[in-house]
Amino acid sequence: MSIFIFALKENLRQRLALLMILVFPLVLLFIPSMDGMLPMSFGLFGLLNLYCAFLMSRPIAEDRMRKVVVRIAASPVSHFYYLVSHLAAASLLLSIQCLVFIIASALFYGFSLVNYFVLFLLYCSYSVMGLSFALAWNTMFRSYNTSFALFSGVGSIMCLVSGLSFPLSLLPMTVQQSVRVLPTYWLAHGLAALGASSPSSLLLSLVILWTFTGIFLLLGSKRRL
Image (cartoon, rainbow, N blue to C red; front, side, top):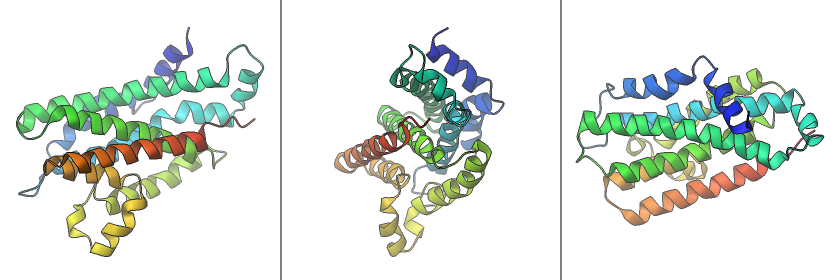
């Protein structure tokens, strides 16, 4: 069995996995939205996706905490191949979650609301960033449960002040400017750019999301024995 298939099975074995991928995105569609703005579900999906990315990082985190990387280092399998296989499996599941939400949104809100292909690209970029962020975050803890408990609070606050679970335009201007250092802000910025049909701002969001992805991967992908 390849590591990729094994990683897929490990992720799908988690109780919440299928619910977060297939069911919870549909529930978001029924959350009321404010007039003149994109549906609130578009931003709240960012919160759901971030938590799902953290859930998908669990096999890697637990392998590291159980010192499985020590056995990998002594085997013919390289750490790079092991890590890429796990990340590819997690990214595939996150992409499926994004696709489920995109298709459901198009059917629920209408195909003319936004460019759904661009929205899918934005969500996928954010998903990979979220996965890499979870990878880096988990390196700071020796227990996945402790890591998840703290992430639950930090992630919720990040999404709140970034404008994903609360309209950014309603926050003070000083807050809007200061939260630009948060990676979650750039999904909200991208969604706003998509709603305003601003290609340059949307491209900026994508570039910064991938920049954060590279930084977090460098921090979280180092082998720790």
